[in-house]
Image 1: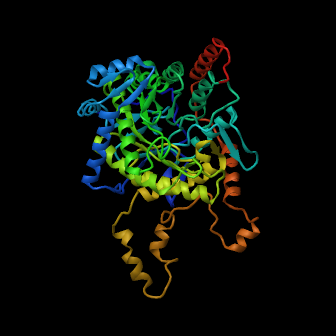
Image 2: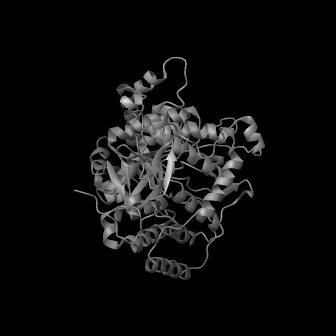
Image 3: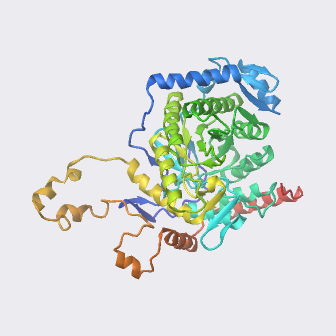
Length: 514
């Protein structure tokens, strides 16, 4: 049975535009990228069983608190868990059958059907960073994010084909009241992009508003039967879910919308310093969150999330892009595949305050682990700085360029007569170059990946062009993308209805700034 197509209120984007990755011509509309290389299996069966057993001990002996949420406690009690006050313990065998109803793959429909995404299987989706209150660029430095910044990042993510998803809170627009900014953020995703997006989770009402705005665009009946919006739900690690997060989780699950269940574990702070112990904790917390979505609505789409990082134990500062969490990501990928759930893992993490060598090294380590672990949804793929406190304009461009390279890397290698190039060897022979041979002429447009920001000229050419480093080149590129941006078509009647909805909701409540 084929997937239903979203209603035509979401006009199709400029699909005739082309982009080039690795010399491989690709349509500017990219619905994710297929992972054709095998995920790396780090642990043996014995190691995986040991971690699964440790997670079962955590759940059965220590348990997880559900704070200020009697409804969730009742759901767990009815499902066979042991509830004592706000603490829930899970006997072995309780969670497995509940998780069986969660789909192994699902579709998130986009306003533009050509951008609709498969979540799961071998499909990989890149989305920009999520949640930073600050933004940074070369011109203005570090500052609080505004609604204009938020709109800019939505436009940039829309303009970059290597980012398949519009993301969620790409930065906090702190110039808008806390209780109203979710309306402007969801409106920006729907108005300035036609890629899939994420909604608000900071209260039940804001979650409901996000879904209601999606219904205006997609239609109420379509939304009830299809996923059109995702919600990022964090455990309050260690071993706690608070009412804000579980309240939003239940809103999205009841509406048949996707949830991304993610612990937030910094080794030594919200989890143990040893990576296997942190993996067991992450596995336990995430399984419980995913299972709760199934108690609310069996079959509701959910993503098994993972967020492991480390801590500088001399200062207490979070560290990112370090090798231990990268190894942890590989193991979490193995565990998620055993559960049969789509995986969110890692991102372009860094502790660096600016998009320097430290930033790109740490981000490359984390992103490579995300790809090698078999992640399906990679949030924070571009823009992350300062441990997630800052969204960088130049960093977004540099990270997106790496995402472009990863499209080629994940495609693996094809071995066929053209790729083996024996005719080229026959034509060229020993001691001669291949530049002008027929095989090179036939393949040069698609042979190698080409960066959109790197400078591969000679020193003299680079010097004469102004000695521009990667930051300066990225600065020029994001400005060019914004200058050339064209909004995807949106039915004026739908746009007006969205604007009216936002205006009504805003006028019904006074401003709250915290």
